[in-house]
Amino acid sequence: GTWGPNPGEEVTDSDSEIVQVGSIEAVPEVFPPFEGDGGTTTSMLASDLLNNGPATLDNVTIRVIDADPGVTLDTSTALITLDPGYPAGEHTVEYEICSIAIPTLCDTTVETVVQAALPGIEATKTQSFVDVNGDGYEGVGDRIDYEITVENTGNTPLEDVVLTDTLLDLNGAALTLTAGPDFVSADQGSPEGELEMGEIATYSASFTVDLQAINSGGVENSVLAEAMPVYGPGVPGTPEPISDVSDNGIDSDGNTEDDPTIYRFQAVITSNGLTLTKTTPRDIVERGQTVPYTITVTNDNAFVVAPVDIVDILPGHFMVDPDSATLDGVSVAVGVEGLRITWEGVTLPANSTVTATIDARVLNGVRAGVHTNTVSVYDPGTGDVLVGPATADVRILPEAIFDCSDVIGRVFEDHNGNGYQDDPTAARDGGITDQTYYGGGKGDKLSKAPPSEPSVERGIPGVRLVAVDGTVITTDENGLYSVPCAALPADRGSNFILKLDERTLPTGFRPTTENPRVVRLTPGVMAEINFGASIGKVVRIDLGRAAFETDAHGAPALRPALDLGIRRMVSEISGEAVIIRLAWHVAAGADADEVAQGRALMRLVEKRVREEWRKAGQTQLRIETTIVRAVQ
Image 1: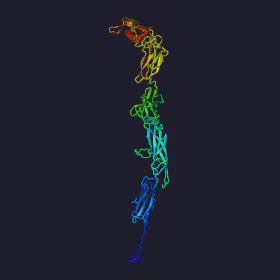
Image 2 (image 1 turned 90 degrees about the vertical axis):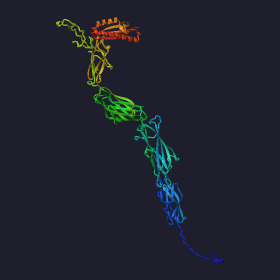
Image 3 (image 1 turned 90 degrees about the horizontal axis):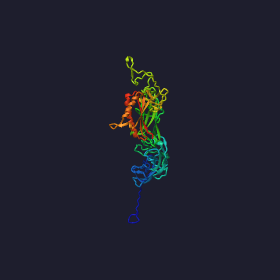
Image 4 (image 1 turned 30 degrees about the vertical axis):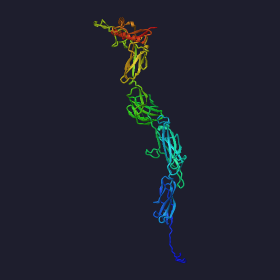
């Protein structure tokens, strides 16, 4: 430089100084991929240098220049974090480090973190029941509609999405969907078979309930969703198929995944459409034998009827073998209360038949005849009969010695009208005689009249006898008949009625015994019924209103002439076997009242005749009445 007052004067000086220049370098790290959903790296300063030495939080500052979504660089820790839920692949952050000592000494770089692929898929199947026929029951022909949703729950797109449906009945047997699964839509607009991250695709399917399903009690449905992940740039590894079995969408059951969608059909109790039968292959059995019974209950409804009780009532003196009870061929335990056998809680499948069997032994104390087994189906809740009763009969044939009662007898000529077939060689004890005695006996004592020639009371052949059950018997050439096992009397005996067909007697013969006749039969004991008949004199009394008058009390009475005639008639015929026939004459057009009045007046005459006959009659008296209409 110049110095002094004069410009030509110069002054010079020299000096030197050594300056050290600093260095800084930001070097990208190579971090391992995040195998979980997101993650945090180690320090991003690990490879950075300051003045050829490690850069640390003590000698440098960190400033974030730019970062991808979800990527965070914590400048206080030098750690990089990737938040969960971001796609698989590379995610970057750009930063700057500067020397604390020389703030202008800086360098920048880009760090890259890699999210590994975590592909995922989730299927859910829900259902709704449709009562197609509107009958209010869950039965054959109704429909179950299914909605299937498939969600991409992973961090990669999916392609080749396919569904495989499995439909089973509750017995584990396979069923087939009626329709579907059919693609409906995807909420982000992807076509069928593709899903973006978080996208949900919806599918539909349906099943029309068939007999197999309804009778198993329900259906179990699940779907297998399969797909292939799509790896973008920087995603490590090789894609592998993924799959998921559907859940039913109901997490309140405690199972939040892979829970099959189950629909259980509700059974119904109704009397409609039920048919009951009871059979046995043995119509005729013997005491001590075993009788097999078969019960069938047919449900013609399109729905299951359950639960019901099948109640069988055995005949008296039959004993059940409880170990013989079966239901559809399988041995089951039954309730036994005396003669009552119960199959409890039986399920009647739709359009099907349930068969129950039981054996019963015939005890020795059972009576011969028809024995009926009765069965009904009940509602166990109310005790109401749903169907029945149905019956099965078995017949126990009588044993002649112990059960039957035979009837024998004869139709004979009752000459003396006493109702007994007398021995021709001796008078019957208790027979009717005229009690006439004659003198000339020993010591001048009275003696009976000398015996007359014996009268043989022979049998009458070809006479027909009829029992109340329609059995017709005809006497043989000796007038004899027999009815083997005529009846099976009750333990205390039973009445047996036999009537003689008077039209088959020889001409002019009339019964001298009661007709019909009743006898008490006892099991194992023979009985005898005889009928007497004889040719008797018929005395006819023709009557009309002129033969009657009115007494002091206004009641009808016999006129004195009629009463006198009756007394004289009885005195003349008292020793003979006669038939008195009362004939009441009415006009041709007489109505029922007139006929009834005539019968009432004939009863007055009959009563008067019997009064006189009891005084003088020596034989059995028979009175007949008839109505005679005038000829027009």
